[in-house]
Image 1 (cartoon, each protein chain N blue to C red):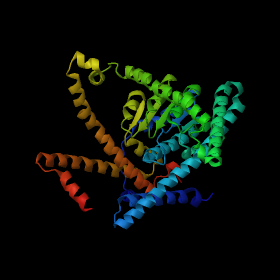
Image 2: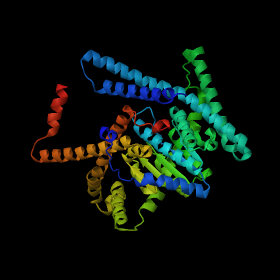
Image 3: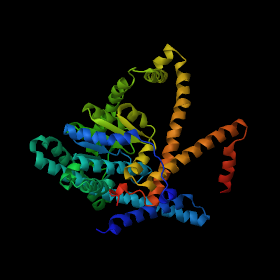
Image 4: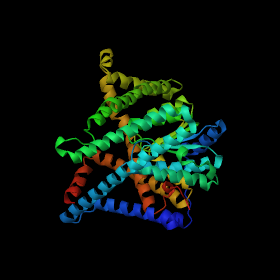
Amino acid sequence: MSEAKIGKEFPVRKIPAFDAIEEAVARSVEMGRPVHMTFGFGTISSAMAPQFIAGLGVLSHVARLCGRYGAKLIATLGVPEAIATTEEIVREGYYSSSRPELYDPTYNVRYLTDQQFAYASAVQATLIRERVGANIVVGPFYAESLIFMEAGNMVNAFQIAGTARETQIPFFVLVADYSFIGEEIFAAGALASGDKETLASIRGQDIGKVLSIVLIVLGVLLLFGGYKLVDALNWVWKVG
Amino acid sequence: MSIVVRRHIPQLIVTTIVILTVAFYYLYINKNIAESFTTADKALSDWAVIITSFALIVGGTDILRFHLVRLKREGLKQAPFSAVTIGLLMVMVLFALYGWFLSYVDPKAGITITTQPQFRWLYLNVYAPADAAMYSILVFYIASASYRAFRVRNPMALLLLVTALIVIFGNTTVGGLIWPGFLPLRDWIMTVPNTAAFRPITIGAGLGTIILGLRLLMWREVSWMGRRE
């Protein structure tokens, strides 16, 4: 990030799911249907917070696109502590695109409930009753993930999904048109910002990945050599 | 609102909490400091619970506002859904308040919000079955999603189908009757290729979380506030 500050540019690979968001919004406008976005049942005040924040970053991008194309956006959530943030993001999206007349907090932001399957049921009802054109779901998802995807499929919505919860990723890959896999949801926020320094942080993430691969290979080689690295780490832990 | 109130104060709060949480968890100086860190860490968690509890009041009000506005705009079309939601919301709140009142007036009776008889009846006989029904719908959705996914359109889809069949047969008793080899094969698939596929995702997600945390700390991640000045 410090190198980016002095002007160095880092190429960032394209994430198909991120690029597809614009297509999803445009398609919804053509069909005269609203765009739906939700973040899953993980809360912003738990270990799931990073994924929730990543979801809010994607919402920020979606709200701006909805403002630009004049699309109706419905953001549903099951986390009461994020109502104000969500309203602010959607409002800012429409206002920054010079379409303040499209912003209606009652229509655009819907807090449903904090109970998992009541939330799943309400999102499902919203998708079907509103006949959404695009269903974008990014955040920490639990068992409700497939319910959202299948409901979106019933109304032939263009579906983009993403989560870093590995147990739910297969459902999204299976049913969604495009999916963010694992850490791609965190990169999406950086891509949405378009800021060079923020984009450079993805480079840092990739360096971390390379380092992890090197460590894994080293661990395997050491294990073949009869040396258990875990014993040394346990020794450090005991001293600590 | 000035940029200080709209942007800098929220970022400062987030930065402070992130630094404190990391320090409380990872720093070890001596036993006394570690104990005070644990107490402070618990206090932070308690604040989060308290904020969430108050946010629920905002949430309840939001639900009420949404349904009242929808009723006004859409009239009879929306009435069945909104009327049931508003009605049950009010009934549950009233019974909860009554239980809360009883817990103060007559503590010896042992009635609290969750043990108030009508509240409990509604929870166990209306909410719980509806919740279970919603969960069970998932089974049908898994079946329909699997049907679409397992259609053999290319060699990779065939591989997916074969793997899925092995795991399905390995998980059922009838699979063992057809061929005893399904069970060890399922175990191998789950422990070797499946784990190998999941671990990079887990490591990547961990690294992504760290980088997101760093962006938050360095005030580069502002999209969650809905503005990118």
